[in-house]
Length: 307
Image (tube, helix red, strand yellow):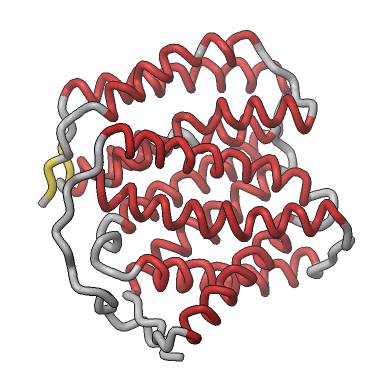
């Protein structure tokens, strides 16, 4: 298998297709958001059996190897760009390595709330690089939704008594995710999504394995908690969200795709309360209305201008 990461050539000829409807984008984005949010819950469950870096390294390596075998059986060589690999490392290894490490001392719901600030960071990066311009309507939508997130996060930081360093790790991981999302915009639509997913996940797993060995000894308490968390995150979460995100970025741009992170806190809060017994605050529910309104303003706008 060729792992030189040379620029890839699409495996099938390019076909002109009609742009997907806003409803299709909304459905795909909502599924992406739910899967993304559920990963924090599955991660918390997995932490009862092993360390965060151990869980992530095994998760990424497992799904990466499965994809590599599938590509080999189809006699496809792994040929993706270095940009795709770097985007995957930022979006998987760096982002989740930091976020999961911080989440050992932070509730899963608050972790999702911090991560959902990704859209503003993506927009800021796009504006700084001059690659994407947003209209006033979308800008107000993001501001409204982000205000709801800040309201919720401020309450939780005040009442939950959290370690600042753990929150800082999650924030740093969120910045890495924004950088990875922006880089993925130059990958989506130009390279085969299955090969990109394989390279990104496999590279992330191989980078995290030695770190997990050095810091956690790769120690695992085998059982239902470990296997359930690992397999769920390896399949629907790792593979599913990677492919959906690449499609969303290709169809709607990085800023619109990342805006679906704004829905993740509410999926995470519902799952965390129902499955982990985490506390639900009144402002968690009150923030839902401006969040949904902001999402509507972002999604129902003209496609972003690109260069």
